[in-house]
Length: 173
Image (cartoon, rainbow, N blue to C red; front, side):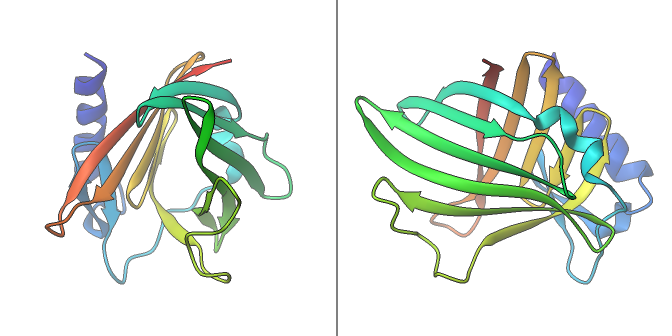
């Protein structure tokens, strides 16, 4: 039922949003910001509902995300995967106001804090569409299911050059 509601919202955004020509579907629950398009106007306070301490299961272990409340035009977050008794990897993340819209940025780290990306590089995903309980960034979607549940959908590039969708269900700690 929740998947149908999300797909219905996705269809409505694609059909009726002012930036509909600027977006296309990447996976079942994620969008792509088309080349030479701009992100819609938005402020960090519109996604304050992401803030909190979230826990779930994925990759054969326990996952955790902690997001700060909005301040200074940004939110900061961290992710970690615990597999057995060891950290699998970490992510440091930001959601920030940029050019009148929002962007999601992250860097990956091994358990010894050696980075996956080059020193001055980040993975950046601009905002594609936004509604009261769902934020579509290019390749990642945050959906507030209810006050205790956060659903995150991630488009992950596969070996054939296409995308698989990873789904993370978090519960508020």
